[in-house]
Each structure stands twice: as structure tokens, then as C-alpha cells.
Length: 336
Image 1: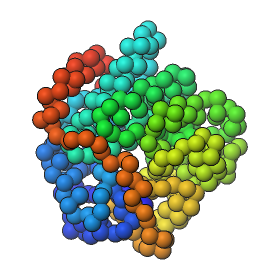
Image 2: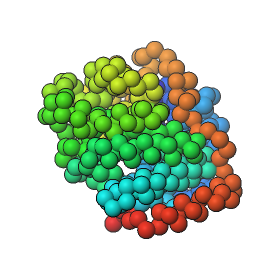
Image 3: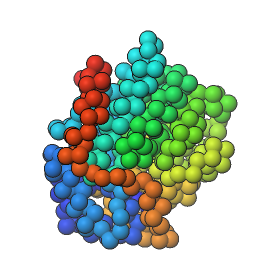
């Protein structure tokens, strides 16, 4: 299955055609697709109307510098602020993280979007892509935040996606632009980067997004292209039964597998359920690649569709909305 990107504020004719393809399970929205709450709600409705099957409409609305919807949405703090608060008041930090999750998910759901790819459970150890998107450097502390965040998202009727498996925070490179290799052995990864994923799976996380990092002491391929990481470790050893997403195949680190078809085949053959194709320029080649594969069962993502009523009127009338905003007001948004 594919989740694809589109170009603007409205569906173009060719994008309506893409949605007819049997392999398209959803659409991921970016800042380029957002003008206002009303506009993105109309776009989401148009996506659903144009497709012959249910579509998973997604976004990255983590908070801080990764928040695609801004005007009309609360400016969410970056996750590292919770980590700093944890040093002086762990209980308050965990409760605020849960409120952050609920607020983020509630506002996204109010707009008709199903899923924000969150939480980031990578360790905060200096990675250029992760930075203040991570809660903390300590795996036990990140695990506690992961449990709280998954609970908050579920309270808002949104599925939770742990990313970026098996952990992107302990390498320096940003895989949007460079390859990244983590040489550590498996026992060190189990004792560190995997700890928050174990906690998130136990808390009922619904999906996992793979990273584009290679761990040569464990497997020769990058994690998202690795049957050992996906089927052997994530599903086998760790018992994960939810949906596995690739990271975006347009990232530089994804290119090691070859062209678009090779990247899609490598992800799906390794065990990914859904491949992210965020750049509209790559969508047509991706659809051609899927034509050569068995018909996708897009029903597998039905568990990720948003639950409960969507609408801003009801959310704004909920006292928890204003309360959450007030309680989060003292934290840094993490936007320079």
C-alpha cells in the first residue's frame, strides 16, 4: 500500500486519478497543503469523496518545528521541554505530555484528519534531524513519556505511531540529506534505543514508522529494508501486531535501494505494510511500481482511521481544550 503526497490546497485532476488506484491507502498533508482550518477540512472531505475506498489522511503535527497546520491551531511545544521539566517534577511532566498528545490529536481530528505520525520516541542524543523533537536522552524516561503520549492520543480517538524504529537519535546524520550508520551491537540497542518502543507497544501503539538508518552489526540493510528488523525483531521478538510504515522514500538515505520501484519493492518485501511517497513527483512512478505487485489490501489500515466525532465546535466547547492550552503555556514551542 501507498500513502501519497499531493501538491496544493485543492485536489488536481491527476491527483483525483491517483486516488482511484487500488494501492493508494491514504494521503499525507504538509504545510504546502494548508491555508486554514476550513480549507484543510474541505480538502480532507474532497480526498474521501474522490476515492472509491476509505482513505487514511495523515500529517506530521508533532509540535515545535514539525507542525504542518499552524493558523487556527495551538502552537504546540516541542517535546524536549517535557524532558527538561521531568528533572524537577516528573509527575507534572508526564501529565503535560499526555495533555499535549490529547490537544494535538483533538485539533487534528477536529479538522477531519485521521492520523498525526506521533510520537517521536527516538532518544535525544544529538541527531540533526531529531534534535528537540525528542523527549530526552535517557531511554527509561523516554519510555515513560511514550506511555503517556500514546494514552493521550488514544483519549482523543487517534491511533499512535512510534517513530523512527529502531531508533534514529543516536546517530548524527539527518537521513533527509545523508546516509546514516549506527555501528552499535544489538545488546546495546536493546538496552537503549529499543526501550521506548517496547514501552509503546505494551501501551497499545497502533503503528510503527521505520527509520532509514543502517545497523550493520544487526543486518546489512537499512532498517526499513530489513526483514530481520521488521519481521524478526519488531514483529517476532517484540510482538508488534500493528501497521508498519516506511519513512518517506524521497529522502536521500532511501536512495541506497535504487530507483523508486526498487525502494518500494525493498520496503514491502522486507515487511512494511505501507510505503510513504511524500513527493508528488514520485507518485506516478510509485503507482507503476505497484502495478507489478499483487493487489493491496487497503483494509489493513482501517484500525488507524480516526475514531469519534470530528468538528471544531464540539472541541472548542470541551473545557479540556482551553485547560490543556493553559497548562502547556509555559513550555517553549521550540520554533526559532
